[in-house]
Length: 253
Image 1 (cartoon, one colour):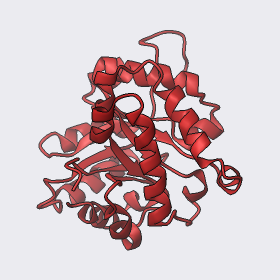
Image 2 (cartoon, helix red, strand yellow):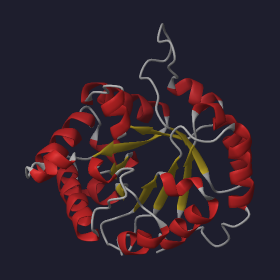
Image 3 (cartoon, rainbow, N blue to C red):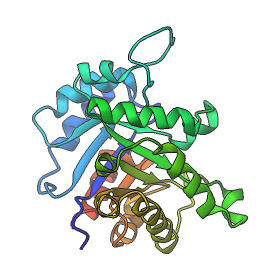
Image 4 (cartoon, rainbow, N blue to C red):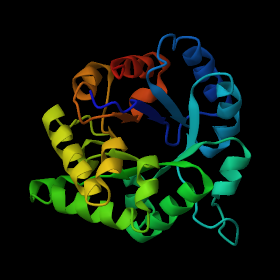
């Protein structure tokens, strides 16, 4: 056993109103039972963050945002800062999801700034990395992961590295119904950990590296049973309380 606490995060993307968020959490929190050994994080859209924080206040579930801007304030229409997230009780933030990279042109340079600010302000960053289908087919998976890890963690001190959560999300498996095999996922995650060891060996063993990409109740146990896989960042399957609960159950050590 790795000794790392499993983490399962629900990335709701652009789904759920405030009312739907409250309904989900009212149902889900009542069912979590003996999941103390698994860290559970809910990542709702901005409009539902406050409602999620309030509903989770007396539970072990933590709440994270899906993105943030690196500046504390300024003329950045439509953006939200770390301070604004902290002000409403948010504890973490997803950074660098492939949809942010693809649709909103988020760069590794911007992500490096965001990761640094999140750590500085005490938010837990969940940093997403992963290759496209074309990059995997061309044998470039390791090169892509190496570039992303080096660039996105540029400037992170070795003593802060263990506070970062990394999610390996092969782009070709996000929302496509395709899933990396457990062997493919573990191989990529082991490579990521080897890159982190180049920064600090001790921190590399402490960093939790999740798998994300069409994780469902039917494949969760096989994926999460792997030694190197420390949990999951779940998209579509996290929208249903029963499905998400089953995935959390599969993460129990």
